[in-house]
Image (cartoon, one colour):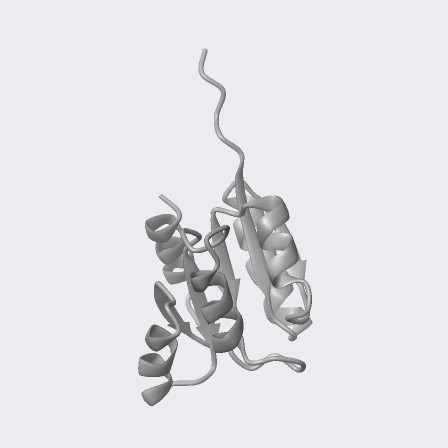
Length: 124
Protein backbone atom coordinates (compact mmCIF):
# COMPACT_ATOMS: atom_id res chain seq x y z
CA UNK A 1 0.00 0.00 0.00
CA UNK A 2 1.36 3.42 -0.97
CA UNK A 3 1.92 5.77 1.92
CA UNK A 4 0.15 9.13 1.55
CA UNK A 5 2.49 12.11 1.34
CA UNK A 6 2.44 14.43 4.34
CA UNK A 7 1.31 17.84 3.12
CA UNK A 8 2.92 20.83 4.81
CA UNK A 9 2.00 24.49 4.91
CA UNK A 10 3.77 27.55 6.25
CA UNK A 11 1.47 30.37 7.39
CA UNK A 12 3.02 33.81 8.00
CA UNK A 13 0.75 36.50 9.44
CA UNK A 14 1.30 38.90 12.32
CA UNK A 15 -2.42 38.89 13.18
CA UNK A 16 -2.84 35.92 15.56
CA UNK A 17 -6.57 35.60 14.83
CA UNK A 18 -6.09 35.33 11.06
CA UNK A 19 -3.05 33.06 11.45
CA UNK A 20 -4.94 30.74 13.82
CA UNK A 21 -7.97 30.53 11.52
CA UNK A 22 -5.84 29.68 8.49
CA UNK A 23 -3.84 27.14 10.49
CA UNK A 24 -7.01 25.50 11.84
CA UNK A 25 -8.56 25.26 8.36
CA UNK A 26 -5.41 23.78 6.85
CA UNK A 27 -5.07 21.36 9.75
CA UNK A 28 -8.63 20.17 9.11
CA UNK A 29 -7.65 19.70 5.45
CA UNK A 30 -4.86 17.37 6.52
CA UNK A 31 -1.87 19.70 6.43
CA UNK A 32 0.91 19.80 8.97
CA UNK A 33 1.04 23.54 9.58
CA UNK A 34 3.79 25.80 10.87
CA UNK A 35 2.79 29.33 11.83
CA UNK A 36 5.02 32.37 12.09
CA UNK A 37 4.09 35.86 13.29
CA UNK A 38 6.99 37.65 11.57
CA UNK A 39 9.24 37.46 8.55
CA UNK A 40 12.53 36.70 10.31
CA UNK A 41 12.48 32.92 10.00
CA UNK A 42 10.52 32.37 6.79
CA UNK A 43 13.49 31.48 4.60
CA UNK A 44 15.07 29.27 7.25
CA UNK A 45 11.82 27.37 7.95
CA UNK A 46 10.98 27.06 4.23
CA UNK A 47 14.39 25.53 3.51
CA UNK A 48 14.19 23.22 6.52
CA UNK A 49 10.58 22.02 6.18
CA UNK A 50 10.04 22.26 2.39
CA UNK A 51 6.34 23.19 2.70
CA UNK A 52 3.93 22.43 -0.13
CA UNK A 53 2.65 26.01 0.10
CA UNK A 54 3.43 29.30 1.86
CA UNK A 55 0.55 31.58 2.83
CA UNK A 56 2.02 35.02 3.38
CA UNK A 57 0.64 38.34 4.61
CA UNK A 58 1.98 41.42 2.82
CA UNK A 59 2.08 43.79 5.78
CA UNK A 60 4.01 42.10 8.55
CA UNK A 61 5.17 44.13 11.51
CA UNK A 62 8.84 43.56 10.75
CA UNK A 63 8.93 43.02 7.00
CA UNK A 64 7.19 43.49 3.67
CA UNK A 65 5.71 40.18 2.58
CA UNK A 66 6.50 41.02 -1.06
CA UNK A 67 10.21 41.12 -0.19
CA UNK A 68 9.91 37.74 1.52
CA UNK A 69 8.03 36.36 -1.48
CA UNK A 70 10.73 37.69 -3.82
CA UNK A 71 13.41 36.02 -1.66
CA UNK A 72 11.52 32.71 -1.72
CA UNK A 73 11.08 32.86 -5.49
CA UNK A 74 14.70 33.76 -6.25
CA UNK A 75 16.36 31.16 -4.04
CA UNK A 76 16.90 27.83 -5.85
CA UNK A 77 16.07 25.94 -2.62
CA UNK A 78 12.60 27.50 -2.34
CA UNK A 79 11.67 28.85 -5.79
CA UNK A 80 9.28 25.97 -6.59
CA UNK A 81 7.19 26.46 -3.42
CA UNK A 82 3.84 28.05 -4.31
CA UNK A 83 3.17 31.34 -2.51
CA UNK A 84 -0.36 32.54 -1.78
CA UNK A 85 -0.45 36.16 -0.63
CA UNK A 86 -3.28 36.63 1.89
CA UNK A 87 -3.68 40.33 2.47
CA UNK A 88 -6.11 43.12 3.22
CA UNK A 89 -4.58 45.17 0.42
CA UNK A 90 -6.60 45.37 -2.80
CA UNK A 91 -6.42 46.77 -6.32
CA UNK A 92 -2.92 47.80 -7.33
CA UNK A 93 -1.57 45.54 -4.60
CA UNK A 94 -2.61 42.58 -6.75
CA UNK A 95 -0.22 43.77 -9.44
CA UNK A 96 2.54 44.29 -6.89
CA UNK A 97 2.07 40.80 -5.43
CA UNK A 98 2.33 39.22 -8.86
CA UNK A 99 5.51 41.21 -9.49
CA UNK A 100 7.10 39.56 -6.46
CA UNK A 101 6.49 36.14 -7.96
CA UNK A 102 3.47 35.11 -5.88
CA UNK A 103 1.36 32.41 -7.45
CA UNK A 104 -1.93 33.90 -6.29
CA UNK A 105 -3.48 36.59 -4.08
CA UNK A 106 -6.43 36.21 -1.70
CA UNK A 107 -7.98 39.34 -0.19
CA UNK A 108 -8.94 39.59 3.49
CA UNK A 109 -11.58 39.07 4.63
CA UNK A 110 -11.73 35.79 2.75
CA UNK A 111 -14.23 33.00 2.41
CA UNK A 112 -12.95 29.76 3.97
CA UNK A 113 -14.10 27.75 0.94
CA UNK A 114 -12.16 30.06 -1.36
CA UNK A 115 -9.06 29.70 0.82
CA UNK A 116 -9.30 25.91 0.65
CA UNK A 117 -9.88 25.94 -3.11
CA UNK A 118 -6.86 28.15 -3.76
CA UNK A 119 -4.59 26.13 -1.49
CA UNK A 120 -5.68 22.87 -3.14
CA UNK A 121 -5.08 24.33 -6.59
CA UNK A 122 -1.62 25.68 -5.78
CA UNK A 123 -0.37 22.79 -3.64
CA UNK A 124 -1.59 20.05 -5.99
